[in-house]
Image (cartoon, rainbow, N blue to C red; front, side):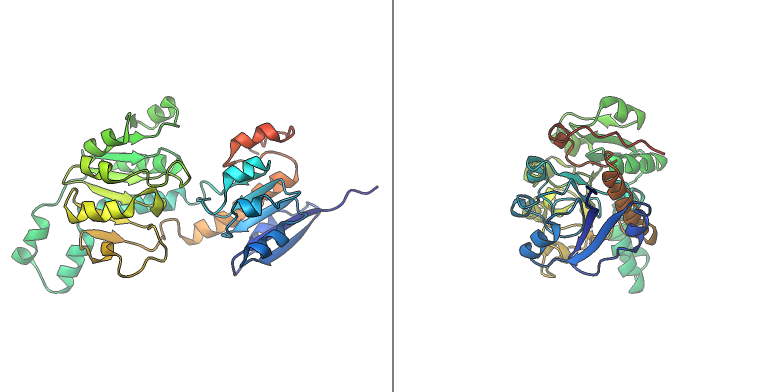
Length: 340
């Protein structure tokens, strides 16, 4: 009896771009179908009877996971995977794969840009200069600018983006410390990063704090009022990972009471963020629209990586970037993916 053909379902909330993804599957005999899913029911229908799911921003809560019948894995566009219930996926023996690394350089550059721009008060001085203000008229802003060289940068999480930020910050002469209970000490040593024992240690020692943790059940509101109280009044807080890793109300209150000097924020609790968000009224807060990972190159890299990971799954090997490695214990033996 002939084996049935492998099936791939690419699901998207809108405007799917399957071209580059499909190119990576050349030579694999499979059906490739594209679905726009705007409801849970449409998602459940789309993923029935397929071998691999490629997900472009479609929410997959446990109610969807429980309906997956044959798929080995979900390959998700982008670095963040908080729209996918990865714990429920593990319970259902489904691998969740992200495109870690596709935007490491972009996000780390954005974080460094915020460090430089906060220290140099870029947006405040930009506005003053355009309004013809010079010298004495700008001295209230320029008189208390903090240095960057020899300052301490504290990283919350030392994954691949955090490590890239460390490498770039060291080139600026910064001393880098990190809080990450999951990173091996020898990796920190290799990147010349000092690991600290608690978030409050990090907050109290840092001149700049930069967030680089994924958003999951363990990291929601990881940073809040206690952290901000421990920060130096001259320090800056930078977030380019996910808004909900921070208690946004506590962040707003801490900025109002001048617990620290200012912030650079690419991400927020609610996105798009309502224009009446108090953060938008503060001149010492610099904001961007969740654009840290964006560039022409990153967009192409993400599509290629998604396709390559899907190809690994279809060929029966392990993916490179498995979000829920604990799922291995409930899946049969697969050959390890080896870097070609």
